[in-house]
Image 1: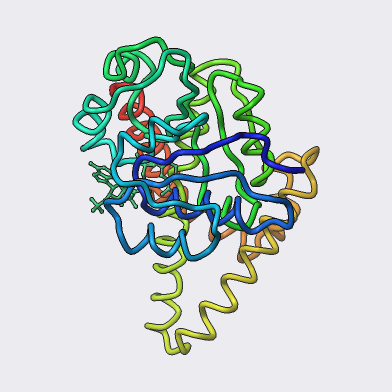
Image 2 (image 1 turned 180 degrees about the horizontal axis):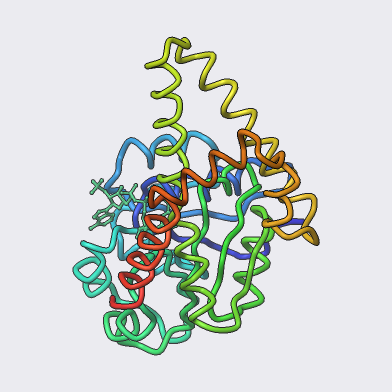
Length: 261
Ligand SMILES: NC(=O)c1ccc[n+]([C@@H]2O[C@H](COP(=O)([O-])OP(=O)(O)OC[C@H]3O[C@@H](n4cnc5c(N)ncnc54)[C@H](OP(=O)(O)O)[C@@H]3O)[C@@H](O)[C@H]2O)c1
């Protein structure tokens, strides 16, 4: 399905903008016009080289001026300074990807009544396989991210915040893998063999969880743990030594950070 938006604009040409733009221009259908901010010259030039539809704008304001759907994709620490300096059009569609700044704060920074939506895309939008949470529900933004994978429109901000916490597990996922591979290596297995084994193993486990939504995860754990066997032993040791408590602590802390803003 084609992208009906006339012109897309991106303020902040970093990791997530690169992923979104790559996803947009990778399809067989015609891409819309895309304007990216110029500051991150290398990434901007790379995106412009991907498609003639991508233009590196002269400055941030030019991106705002031309965009029918404008994405805010700068880091939270510079967001106030960057957004305050821009002049938006009344009713302009603005999609903020900035994880820790709420609607109220953004509205105050933007200072004209815009059509404001928050979204949390994941880097997998680059291959059109990313799940993106959206709040409030917005048909145009949902349609946009549906073309880059799956769009999940949240009915409440609480739901959106909880999914944002889950989206923050990417670093932990690779960190846990790295820790396990490091342990396997320390016991004598070559790093490459350890990593290949673990990546395939986790992929298979995720596939089972994904393909069996009606089987509870607790049941899957029991099903994949022989009574008195190694898997049961591992999970008991993990819980007894504070692994599950540490996970709950991290989830609570990130939710509190998202909700404090
Ligand atoms: N990465 C993800 O998976 C992900 C997912 C969902 C949402 N997000 C959100 O998206 C936002 C961007 O994340 P990111 O990972 O893409 O960060 P990033 O790679 O650091 O990209 C941010 C970009 O903004 C640029 N920038 C800084 N000041 C600017 C200015 N005045 N005008 C224009 N651009 C400016 C930065 O340039 P310099 O490097 O030169 O400072 C950088 O290239 C964050 O708020 C994050 O919470 C990220």
